[in-house]
Image (tube, rainbow, N blue to C red; front, side, top):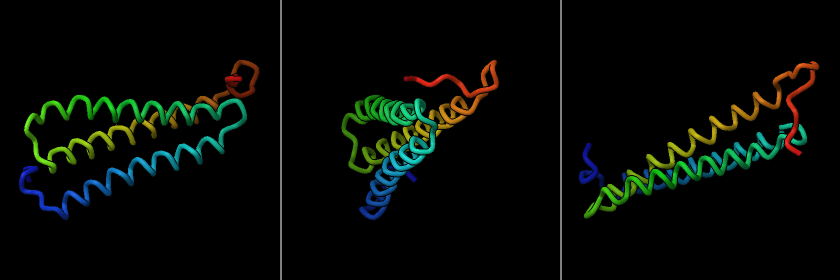
Length: 114
């Protein structure tokens, strides 16, 4: 379906989905941050920063290409950027979770970032 064919209900759905993804990424990062051992909780903030950066970069790349785009096209770009940011947050959280639980040479966990 082309972006021009979207009606107001579809645009509202895209807008809602985008906002839900952003909110879910923030909530998941907060929970993972709380569950991390002391000294490793900063990884949750880095995940949020990485996701926001990817989302903003997606908007920066997508919006100028619309030149005379419609609102529907703008919301499509926003939804795609939100999806990319959400996936980035989850990916970075997985990396920080694994790093915090990886044993080091002495059998302990990875060193903290104090």
